[in-house]
Length: 240
Length: 240
Image (tube, rainbow over all chains, first blue to last red; front, side, top):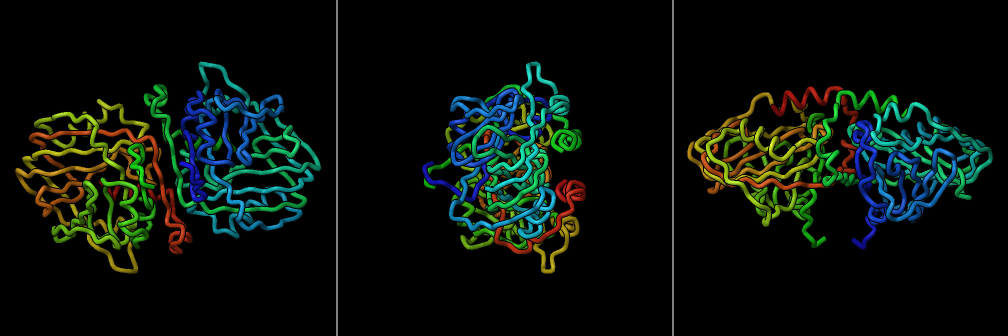
């Protein structure tokens, strides 16, 4: 498709697969980027945090280093959408991550619908986490995420990309708001733990479709017996 | 889009919306049919069972009567896909619905992936159910489905259309196999309760994408506070 559909969040893989330890990459980045130019995810073997901004994909590694992802890098789990550059932005100042989440949820009635969120601004403080690369045989997600390097910077300018996903889709996706950060210098970022936003422009994009793609040709996935009872508990432990 | 994508099940609305009593139609049939030519669902106000075969949509009403659905009829919940007419079919004889479900699940490793199922054949017995039309203010699904007319025919030739959906998507969709029937005369059908298949041709189509569309412009949906804890229990009561 050559038309940029700005109403869809495209997701390859599911969070439940990661919970079960299915960390093998199953879609080349180049293919993922044919479905959106902004997004978040992880790389083959759970190798760090992906942040996709304006069609470029950055990988924040467990060392804290940021690299641009090669087109043939395989991705096990990621969500992307086409950022609506015509969408209105709201200037927001002096707010922390918790208060901003509450405000976004309240102002936009975030409950049953998918939303893309993008924030560009100056953060007086930004605190991130990066999942460490795993080796085969892969452990479960709760084990893989037990020890995660954390990174902090003050007075950093950059971009947050993320989503609100209805809790109905918890297990397929992360329920609620889930966002990653990358700075303008492209040398600091990751999964957001907390921040203090000094001044930023926030855009919220209603996405009426979730296009959930599954790696149907991956044998480990096709045959995996995923304990769904356990998935919810494990997500809470690994993602929060 | 003019290309018929045979790898996607397109779903408008969610089962959780029905569980919460959101029975108002939110997408015209004509738009739904632009995403697939086979499928199942229900109509505005939970008015019967939809069976979509080869691009034509039939509505089995609570009286047992079958009508062809008008293009502007609003649909609250339905799943459609483009039937792959080149897909191989398997001839299966003398089996009941339970054994056939078990066989399809076992033979195709139905667990984590979406599947479209279509069976054309002669049934020595077919037993269906039809949900009755509701009036506003709509009750919850468990109340609406408490009394449902049932219909039976012997020695009937017709078509089953349905899906296997991974239990990870339970709540958005019906987990497991869910299928509807329409006879060749287009005067008998509904949600399948049980059957005895005398001889039929079965085709199973792997669908690697679920395109989940939400009625983002429906105010009742946007503001609904759906109790997700309750959804699973209510689905079990209403759908089984």
